[in-house]
Image 1 (spheres, rainbow, N blue to C red):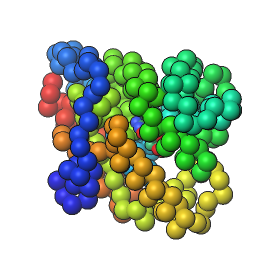
Image 2 (spheres, helix red, strand yellow):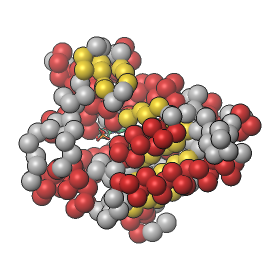
Image 3 (cartoon, helix red, strand yellow):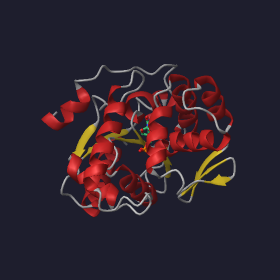
Amino acid sequence: MNAAASRYGTAVTRVAASTAPPSSQRRDRGTLRCYTGRLLTSLIIAIDGPSGAGKGTLARRLAEALGYRHIDTGAMYRAVAWKAHQIGLPLDAESELAELAERADLRQEGGRITIDDADVTRAIRTPEMDHSAARVARLPAVRAILVERQRALGDGGGVVMEGRDIGTVVFPGADVKLFLDASAEERARRRAHDDAHSGGQQGSVDRLKTDMAARDQSDSTRKVAPLQMADDAIYVDTTGVDADEVFARVLALVTEKATGEL
Ligand code: DC
């Protein structure tokens, strides 16, 4: 593990899964199938890392290439925060927020994010929602519900799931675990040019860098499931590497890993 990786590995206490291990850990490896001599139906691919590291782009492209589902777990925390705002629920009302998280009809289809039939694809990508989602994500009762829902979504495999605790808590038995990172400068620059992220922040890289650092701090130091690299994750530094190159490298790696296990 290099110095950058150790920021997420050794500095923070490892958090164990709070409930029984997901069935992915008990899956029979013999059920993996090989298509056209290359890939495979049922892997669980976990991608963790701080914001702006390139998780979304990579996860989307991998899912597309493999014919897998792409689950953006950050969008689930964001959608719950958005709904709380809509109905005037305070962001410290933990049990009410957990109930909201449990009952909400949360969907991710074709790149659209909906909660209870409201399309929030763009509405959840604002500076206000960045902040609110980080607050919601600190609440253990909300996390417990969303982690269960994430396990239910990914348990059958054939999924690329991105977040902060996928390889450590949601699917500690994931077939492939990646931890994406990049320098703070580059992550802020990418976010500033991310069209999906509204808020008129283009150009204010310094401001974004400060905001991201605060959120990274919140995500990395919270008591429950802090952002942390799993011991068996592959650390991928995307600083100065374009999205095509990251995708090509990771696809090769996943293929290697999958065929090696068949
Ligand atoms: O990845 P994102 O920026 O859309 O995530 C929104 C917030 O939710 C962010 O503060 C990190 C948090 N989060 C989390 O705690 N656990 C996850 N699995 C995914 C996101």
